Amino acid sequence: MTIDPLVLMTDVEQATEALLRTAEGLDDSAVGEPSGLPGWTVGHLLTHVARNADAYTNLLTWARTGVETPPYSSPEARQDGIEAGAGRPLAEQIADIRAAHERFADAAASMPAIAWAVQLPPIGQSAAGVPWARLREVEVHHVDLARGYTPAEWSDAFALRLLREIVTGAPADGPAMVLRPFGLERPLVIGSGDGPEVSGPTKSLAAWLAGRDDGAELTVSPDGELPTPARWK
Image (tube, rainbow, N blue to C red; front, side, top):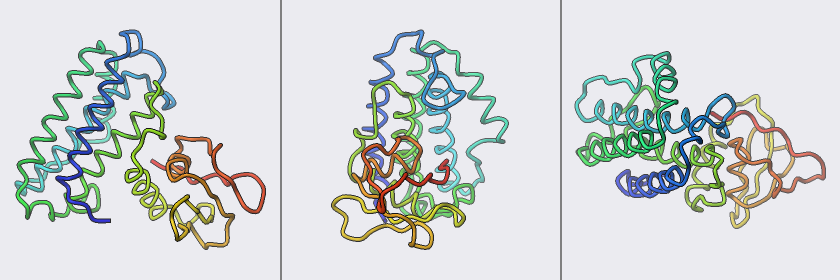
């Protein structure tokens, strides 16, 4: 699915503002409370959202300048940055996310058309895929805050693209299944195509495969238990 990266930047802007509104509704004690991700507090998650924006800014800089600029200097540096920022006050976390988003938005606005076609080895695709990657990060981690924002809030377009991406990237050794999202004429197939049929709303299917929903709105045929999806990200 090809979408103008600058059009997606509008979605990134809106998704970021929605996440910030949720964060602004919390109190300071929330920073140390568990998020929806095992082992991470809300502070860990907010810090990661900010540092991820900087990582994608680095990738856009690489595409624009030709100077190799990895998203993170190392996996250890990525984790250390999250740990170092996790305990900061909520106001500082919010300001950090906003500033990091502005840097990312500025980097996108500075991209000449030709730079969007530059291939970036760390993500295995061109720079045009970066805005989608950032949108996915913000929307999914907004759910992971576990503070009232659910996959039901996702747009239909976002949920369908996420669903298709997960299906396309599903590991070959994962469980086979046939997905039938409501309103979609053709099913989406994972694996051999001889697995059970799983039907339901697109948002519920995408969230279930992403590990962000228990699949309660889904039905399986023939009758039985839902298969266990392969772990996603």
